[in-house]
Image (cartoon, rainbow, N blue to C red; front, top):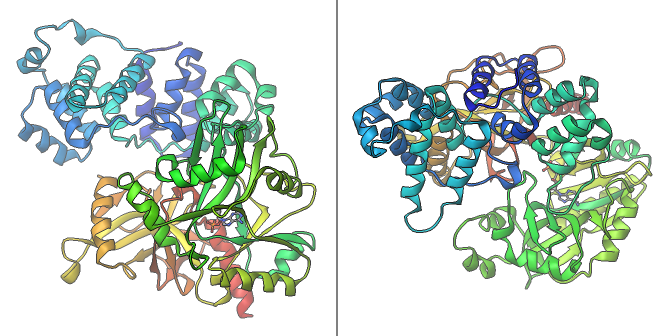
Length: 596
Ligand code: AMP
């Protein structure tokens, strides 16, 4: 049966919520997609992912938790005491909405609606619910908070309790279905192309456009050939290409065919700059956060350097001391990542960008050209200036030159170098962490200082000096194979007072009542949090330990020894971008080899 009602979609949400098994999730979404008419596909895809639009351009509803609670109180006609009681009990606003709205609706609701009870029986389609949420996002300016609450109240009233539960979760950005982008990618391949083996084609198309709804519609209506011909387009962020890592220059050179392009690895913020055909400039981070408002100086400099024709380039922003002509450390740049007071910081912390790739120019997608060709195009189209330069680079074909370039990079305040393939196969691989780029960081030279980007999944309350704060965090790595976050260490060291304050508020926002489905843990922290907050960790060693869930190939459990926070919150990284179980296994092997 083809459905369009939101209530019917919610019954799929219920099924998804009940399982954590990837294959089951895929099967449910496949079934859902095959039952969804094309007109409803757009909101269905976003909602399954817990979003209201593509990640790079998601509408901001502007509804704080207390506003959502007020709407729920109005809709259910209950006192704030009652609402809080239920909320404290279940710890999730969606579930609280379901419970409170299941009860007989009281007369205060009718008062709120001015006696109009006809709306109760409205059967909203998925698109209608979506449109009403999008309308809420459009309300801005004075008095908009009240109007938002009123619109949300009406929407809750028009829905059945299960519908209200999921709308509430969508509004709060905590859908909790455990559905990752790649799960939907596979379901699209199965539902519309009839073959899971065609997943890479859907994936490639998605990596180039970053909008799964668009890709789903294309797969359904036009099939494989259309997906294959998808090209990158200015105005739509492309998923960033990532690097592998190795700790031995000789091995790197060998892997790259004897010679390669080495570039400084700037310790800053990666960006993708787009100028679209309407002259609209935007800057996205590697996790597709819109950086445009934060870096007006960078945008101006890039416009000057790159001209007025549509283009996509990539590079790294660093904070720069123009007097001393030096790169300033990463933490300073992070002070520029703010929503308010941007102007004040512009002069205090000047920036500079180093460009290292080009994806679109002269009306064409150039991602399938080799790196040397792309570099040539980049050089041709960039009029460098004090504020915009190309990454420092060189072609090397022996270890001595490699090492010398590395030392120069460290002297220039960079964190290491990137070694890049220059053969004819060196295309720009959107979304891939392949062997065409290999990073070699300063840390690898000292035996004990690999850095790990791990995500917080839980925390314990602190004692003594840390009373009132979270004293210890439970950290996890990412396993792309099972799409889970297995725990890898407890973290307590390296947290200063500022961190403790910061973590207190941040973790409160991410707190969930029980273990997220995609977290694999045998420990029971005092609170669980959604895996979102990424922190950089150093440690002395990877050891065997029975209490954590990362394993080596033989199934031995692994953990970090003496983990310490470096002071860097990697909020430029998505949780799916953090250190993977596979990387940990590789590192462990390298360690053992080094020792031998
Ligand atoms: P990592 O964050 O350790 O995985 O290293 C990869 C990151 O290095 C990229 O996402 C970029 O942000 C950054 N990077 C710095 N310099 C370069 C460069 N010359 N080429 C490519 N990536 C670079």
